[in-house]
Length: 108
Image (cartoon, rainbow, N blue to C red):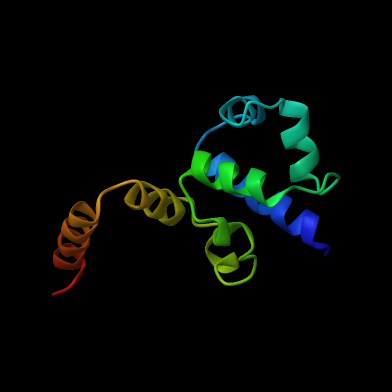
């Protein structure tokens, strides 16, 4: 798989997890939905500055857009991804609090 297609799949994955349409993501970038569609299909190369804007709009690290294999097995576990994305949007103190709550709930 070529790099443009891999990044496009990651953009689509994280956009869908956020519940955004291509048009909504494009609006955050001052772009067009058709441009996001071309990116997601790997038909359009993307500039690094645009990747940074996409990552910011999706509340993820730019590196997540390149990390195709590491978490691939979790992609079908939507609630894990939604939880991770929600936690990423929180301040560190709240992330730690959420971790302690979850740890208490699931350990005996």
